[in-house]
Image 1 (cartoon, one colour):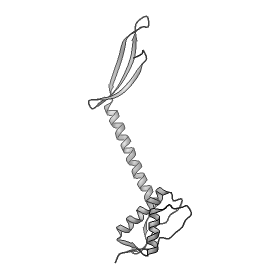
Image 2 (image 1 turned 60 degrees about the horizontal axis):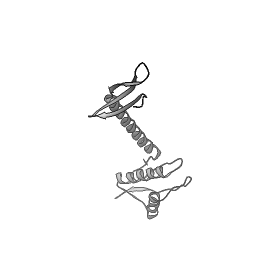
Image 3 (image 1 turned 120 degrees about the vertical axis):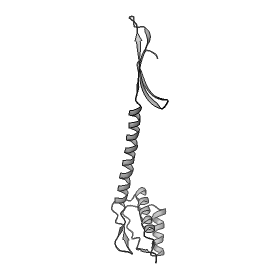
Image 4 (image 1 turned 90 degrees about the horizontal axis):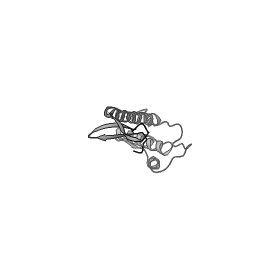
Amino acid sequence: MGGEQFSTERAVGGRSYTSWYEPLRDETGALAGTVALSLDVTDRVRTEAERLWLQAEVIRVQESALRELSTPLIPISDTTVVMPLSGALDSRRAQGVLETLLEGVAARHARVDSPQNQLRLAALRDGPLWAGEQQAIGRIRPVP
């Protein structure tokens, strides 16, 4: 300690402590010692970690809800589903479109109705989509 005050936070034996150190001076101003105060802040540290975890969980749930809203798969009959899309399709959203579509196909035990549409699905999976592109994937029907 060079005569300045400072504080530290550290974990010791599973507990967290914040400590403050202050120089102690004699009547002439010479350094005579140090005064220190430590507080057990374990509960605050645990609460903060829990708050951060909960915040991350809320964000994860919100992102999931946004993905569902931005890539809705709507069954309009036993043999047809539609996915209305609006707005730009960046790579992250295109991935969500593909995942939703493939999960919907699997959940309905469906198949893509033509080789051309299978190619379109492969292009969706493997290539970028550009804003303004419009392409019908086709009907998705239950497997007989």
